[in-house]
Amino acid sequence: MSIRGRYNLQNALRVLKDPSLVRGETRRLRKDALRANAYVSRLLNDEERVDVMAEEWDNLVILDACRYDMFATRANFGDRVTSKLSPGSESWEFMRESFVGRELHDTVYVTSNPHAHKLPDGTFHAVVNLLDDHWNEEFRTVMPETMVERTLTAFEKYPDKRIITHFMQPHFPFIGEKGRKLGHAGIEMQLDADEHSGEPHPWNALLYGETTNRSAIIEAYVENLDVTLPHVERLVAELPGKSVVTADHGNLIGERTYPIPMRTYGHPGGLHKRELIEVPWAEIDADERRDVTAESPEVREEMTDDVIEDRLRNLGYAE
Image (tube, rainbow, N blue to C red; front, side):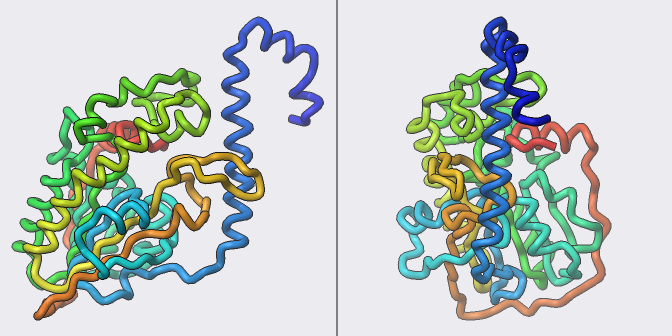
């Protein structure tokens, strides 16, 4: 629809009768601006991206939506923390660029990310998806301590394979003390029914101006990292071989985009702004490396569509 067709007297009268229409139009305009910024960011950002599967490691620990700057100041890995650029600004883009089209039959993927079901059969030797049997109904996520236990179990079962373990944190839902007080219900906002079918999404609430609780949301996000890091450190200490701790992508907390200078939150797909794709890279060397062998893929257990949709909704993803 043309601008003249959209912004006319008839529509102005509709807004006077129903002011909530302004909110929907604001969301539409911001979405259009995000798409324009994403297009420009991909054109301008041609720096080399990390190919995680080509790097040297026995264990790859992936944190979800973890900023490099926050990790570097909070993780107990000292000067072993550097940064690399992710090939994606959201989880599926990272997975698609890193895993799809490859035969990674020397690797087992332990995951709590709801996009993992999209990976083609035969990509890994085995996929251990925790979103069904190990889902925490209270917190609506897979807890970091569960990730540790199931990853160690996977290593015991597959001692001659590389292990990837994909934590959901620091991505919300918020599981720390402050985050629990805030909760999903504590993020006050009004969303159009056709744009919201599940739990509130805190970053979208900030992006679309539907909450002013910015500092509390950012504190809960940082707390999610603080709660998770001790579990990551324990896992790295117990797994034999060389480990790398990284993230699939970062998370914007109000940085302005280009060329339309709008404050942006979360991790919009295709938006390759440096603060969003710069991820931590901590290498923890070991005295001995694992002997790794490739074997034919195992048949993976599939989740039902209802479970997939529920997990995507609770973790803030739209399908």
